[in-house]
Length: 100
Image 1 (cartoon, one colour):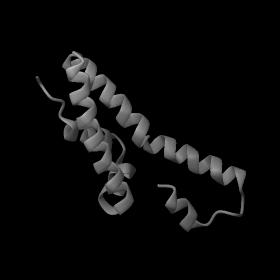
Image 2 (image 1 turned 45 degrees about the vertical axis):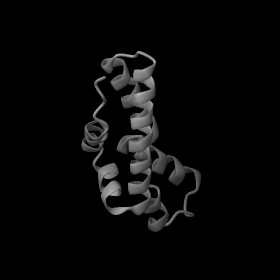
Image 3 (image 1 turned 135 degrees about the vertical axis):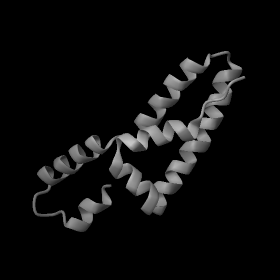
């Protein structure tokens, strides 16, 4: 059984999303979330392989889980813009930094 390289898959996602990569390196909560996702993806890959899915299908599924779980820098920026528009004058710079 060929196993999915979860670390490579997560690394590819983080390379495309530099703010998420910085958070994973400097924010303990983001690092812990990334570790839990890495473990979950390993379990998911083994379960899908046991069900007979080929490596390409398992990779596509895992990539989707990563994208849905971690989001993207672009989605985070849209969330910030929406939050700022909904509550003008209520958010501080510290509040916005916490959304990363």
